[in-house]
Each structure stands twice: as C-alpha cells, then as structure tokens.
Length: 121
Image 1 (cartoon, one colour):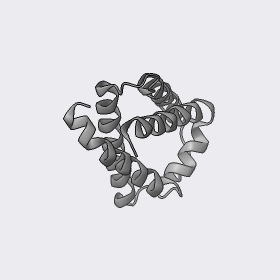
Image 2 (image 1 turned 45 degrees about the horizontal axis):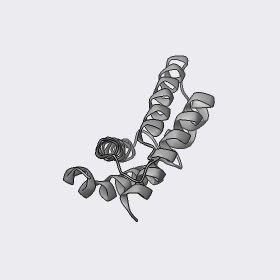
Image 3 (image 1 turned 90 degrees about the horizontal axis):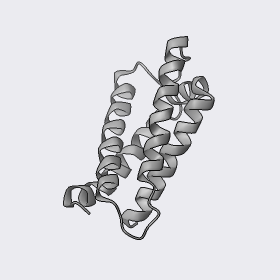
C-alpha cells in the first residue's frame, strides 16, 4: 500500500471518528472504552471530535504530491493513539469491544507511515 493511500485511509478514519464524537460521543465511548461519559467527558469528547475532524481534513491529500507534514502528523498521531489505547486495554480499566481493534489499527497505520515520515516523504 503506498503512502498516499495510507494517508487517505487514515484521514478518512479520523474525519469519521471526529464526526462520530461530535454527534454521539457517549456511544463512541461505550464501544471504544466500555463506559459512559459524564457531562464534562461529553464536552471533552466533542472537543476531541473537532480536533480529529480538523486533522482528517488537513491531512487529506488532493494532489499527486504527498505532503511530508501530513505524513509526519498522521504518523505521530497514530503511533501515540495506538500506544495509549494499548495502555488503556492493558491496564484493565477499559474493555470496550472496539478498544483492541482500534489500538491495532492505529499501530499498524503508524508502522506503515514510519519510514515515509522519518524519511521526510
């Protein structure tokens, strides 16, 4: 899979997750973390949704040239998100049905973007 396709996939996933967090943050928390959100948690989740929606839009590639900045941004985000979701799962505090798949997906995308991101491509 080439870098452009990986960026498109990752951008689309982050955009969709941002929309979901804005629209139904409690549902996202239940399937990802296995728990409900408090009122303040809903507010923070919606703010995170704004960030993910923006990240997805900013990193979407519309030209044939792959942006090194978008590649690095999605590499860092996916790697850190995957590690944190893995930590949440291993700590035993959260057990949502999509937590482990989300962790694996983020880490896989991070690995696929590692070489292009570190090479500046």
